[in-house]
Image 1 (cartoon, rainbow, N blue to C red):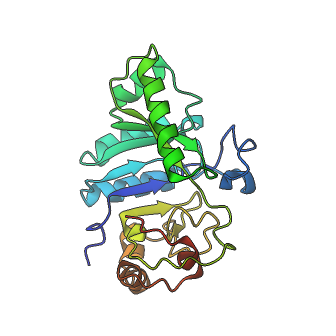
Image 2 (cartoon, rainbow, N blue to C red):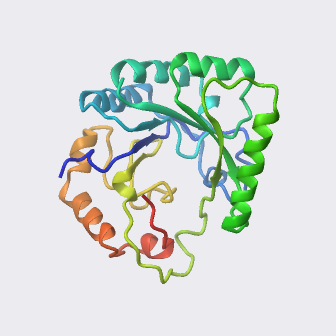
Length: 242
């Protein structure tokens, strides 16, 4: 199996620091310690993606606020040089966005900015309406956006480890579709595994390719892609994440 064949995005959690962590009780950051991924590890991941000519998206966030990390700008610049075929996506709470920042991101080569909209208590219809209202609001702001800036509904499941099992048993491709790397280098089953309880390996002393090409990861992907949810967290999720 080509380890990047099914991968559309690699999410690198450069830090778990966020100034709004105490405002959102349904955000995993509220329950996690603040930490920063070593720059050396970030560089290692970017370099490997470049060496493998990764053509998907690189995101420098998982649950932290990337724009609060002063190293973000250098990481973006490095990614554009070492992994030129990849696109750069920034997911932010929007607190640091301004006209000058948007122009700086565009100049660095960022392809898209997602602004997180928390709404876990809303129905899918209401979440869609909230996102549409946010995007409409953006269009009326006196800000020139040379790159796409869109609202992005965010629904972290704090109770994903304890909630009742879902009866849904549809295929899921998330482990390879969006490779999720936490702040200490764990490659997690997916972004919903915010405790990294189902880590599939660690890239601190291993290559990302060796982790993603391991028999255990191949077995997980084979089961999930055929609708077999053997892990408790997958049984409780029930969605068909792609």
